[in-house]
Every structure is written in structure tokens, then in C-alpha cells.
Amino acid sequence: MEQKAYSRRKFIYRCLGPVMAVMGGAVLWSGCHGGDKSSGANSGPASCDDLSGVSEDEIAKRKQLGYVQNSTVPGSHCGNCSLYVPAEREGGIGKCLLFAGPVCATGYCTQYVAKSNAG
Image (cartoon, rainbow, N blue to C red; front, side, top):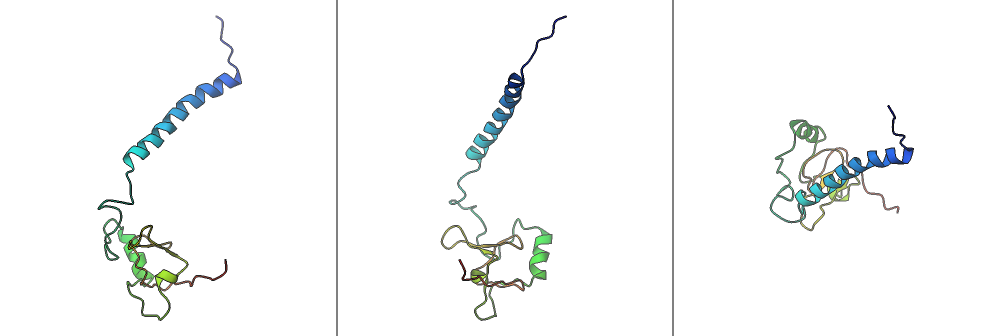
């Protein structure tokens, strides 16, 4: 019985073909079903106290870090903290690098780190 001899190049092409097809399908699927997150009613939390979809562990972490929606420390608030991630659109709700869920720019927690002016 005679066996076919395959070159390394043919082997790689035969393996890469299905992999590329799966990856391409995944890209198309996410593009079609990902939606435009910048518009529509479900584009993020409606307010800073909307904790729907936030796990109990993350809610506990927020409390442990002393997060409040309105800072009582003059000049220190989430909006000028280096851990704060501003909203992508005007009037939106921001995020924090330390915990999940919505964060108000006027908020504060015990891990506040002032933004540096170096840059």
C-alpha cells in the first residue's frame, strides 16, 4: 500500500484553513450581533445607583472601599481620580478600575488617587 507524502506547507495550509474559517465566522458573528453600544436604551446603567447586573461580591467590594456617590472630601472626587474611567459619551456614567458597576464623577472611595499633572 502506497502512502501519500505531504509537505509541511500543505499540512500547515490544511490546518490553517479551518482555523481561519472559524475565526472569520466569530468576527462576523460579533459584528452582526454585538450591536452599537453607543446608542439605544440598554447602553449601560441609567444612573450611578443602578447596580443591576453587578454581582454581590462586587457590591460588597464597593462598600468595603467606602464608595459614595457624592464626595465629602473637598477637591477629591472620582472625576479627578486616576482610577476613574470617564463615560464614553457626554452625560454617561463612568467606571472604576477597582470595582465593577457605575461610578459617578462626583463620587469618592478610600482608594482615591489624585491624577498627576505630569504628561
